[in-house]
Image (cartoon, rainbow, N blue to C red; front, side):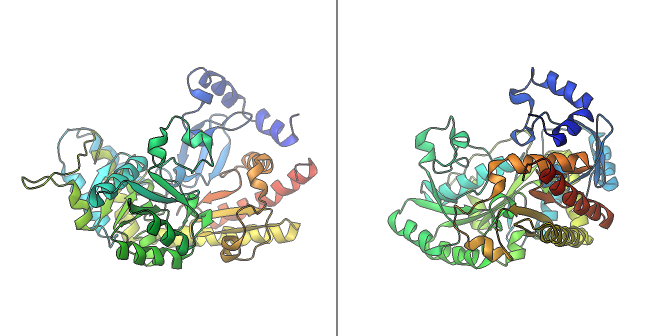
Length: 443
């Protein structure tokens, strides 16, 4: 049965509906990214600028997808457009080293304390793949500890969930899955016990603020304990900064938390809105890639490594991050949104809690919480109505109908281009969404 929210969505997007019918004949599930699947059909964007984007039916949205987290500066930033146009006019792929890659790497070193050496990749998934191989090559060991729910791209090893999600592990040999050790976070005794019982562990990787961009938070004290333990056991500590990098702080989560990893993976903000990733690290770990007559080095090719257009955009974006207050603006807008959503939950007597790391805002419904620590201490089977997918789908569609594009009303990624007016509109839309959902019987 079609709900009133769904009907309004469909009626206002006839061109997107037609485009999806064509896409179904071209792409599996009609989309090019699993996160873009939605019912009754996805919307199709024509252009974006600043904090806004517009679909092919002329609907305007305040955008909180933010290019999956890449667009810290906002869409179509004029300085990025200028440098991209200048660079592409000189040739997009010379197949050789360029001055641009040096400038890009220097911009990273200017911000990241642990970045003694750098190797570029084409994406965050590739950066995580490289990081895992460095860990194994450096230690000569096979297994890597990964924490429950933590996301490290879609490569075979990174997709291991310990059997929790069959879709993630579909098509991956058991021998590969067995090289990943999946354990719960926030309990250092479990990590210690795991290392005591298995001497074939090369290192530990994690999203340093918690799984799925901090949706499942972890304590900073736990990260500090991991640092001490990895040093003691002479294994590698790897931060996945693909989303947190240059966002939660100029120097990423390592600056935000105050813990220096051995190596880190980066993407998203790194490329200034263009494809690009990298691994950074302290020299002794990164030198595993160096080949000398006396030693072998880890092989790493890649046609689009340090792609000149991405290098130009990335170097410019990181220079803006270093020299302006874009991080503070995005964080301030994030706090404004968190406060506003929590006020709405209180007003409408909806159980739930909004929280986040500065510019990464999350909403968890169906729980009684007043702090992030409350969320961390909840049992793993604590009810969360978003897990059913029904309510968040209706809330997300309602927000889209009101011109707000979020991650199904459960995640909002802030940009420096978001204004107070944008956020106030979003808070009002959230209140309307809850009211609409109640009126049609969805909650």
